[in-house]
Length: 57
Image: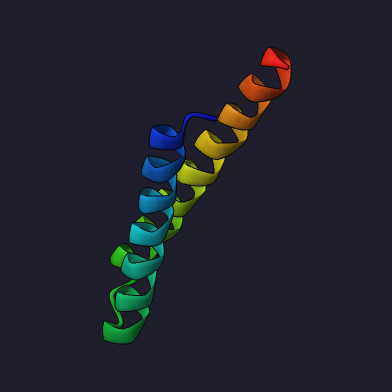
């Protein structure tokens, strides 16, 4: 996995976690759901990059 993509995916994951936490803290279910969705997308991207790396080896 390229370092740049790995960092971008991690940033998305962390941003999603922050949104989820803030949403829970203020009682905003929409923001909580958005944060969970963002985390899920980041995890899927990370998995895809790992599959690509496995086939490169």
